[in-house]
Length: 373
Image (cartoon, rainbow, N blue to C red; front, top):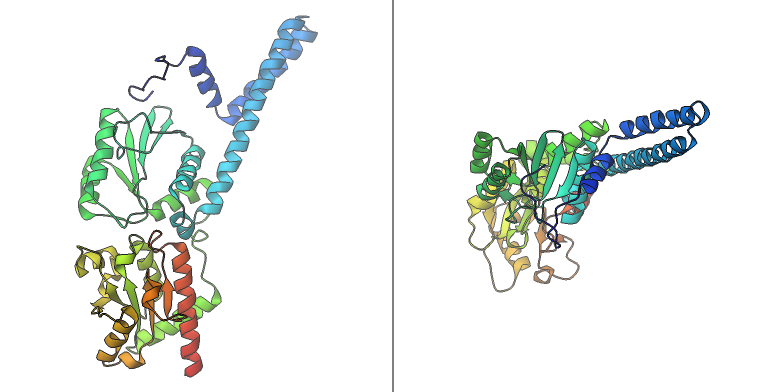
């Protein structure tokens, strides 16, 4: 069905019975229930018309088996439907661990009629693919191992396409919740590799569940909407707020940070640190459409990040009157109880939890400004 499979530890290929059972288990629920009804109906004919009680009892047993298979398949579909419907939002998807996302994709492609299995043990290299999805004469390799990276370059996409060609797959899909590089996008287009971002995954989920894409992006709470309106007014009057970001402490999540910044136009970004070996331009690329809002960098001083920020503000013409917040992975660099600090766990990067805390801090900043005004 999909290239040469590795044999089991005993060195045996799957038996004909195993293959038959797999095919029966893969039948659509409607087919299972229809077979159960037909065979069950014939069992009545066999018993009461043909007086073939043994044949009738065998038919009843077969009918029950198919009925159970159908009911089990319906329950699996309902479970997959609920899992997809309740998790198809950008924040929920980005907050998933690898195993959770794997289960989500299993449910997503199963709901679309595919039989899905892990690619571990079937493909040679780790970067080839993570899942194999089969439907009739279609075989698709799915790669999601780089889902939490800010920028996915061309090499994983080439590895995926090479594996698809070697195993005679009819298609391949690469998924990331960050961004594909321009080289990766161009190469994938020429080689017919499908690239999916978080919005594409949500669109697929909405198609299968009947949920609208707008419902998958719930409106922010009234307090956040009011704060956003105030920010728009500040931008119109040439006023800005500052967000100091410890980019060295955000190993991933810049795409998510960019989305938050898009919703909060008054905030300009200043780098309190840069990742080792990366330039300001590289960080701007990671911020996508908000890269132009990265306007400078804090000069490091021995006293620590908080005092470096204060020095930066003092050197700015409007710095003393600027409203500011800081995203940082080293809270010890700030005074205890610093209200401007949003601490970020370096291991998690800018995830859904950090985004929520940043937005809450933005709302508090706005309320203080309104109260002073």
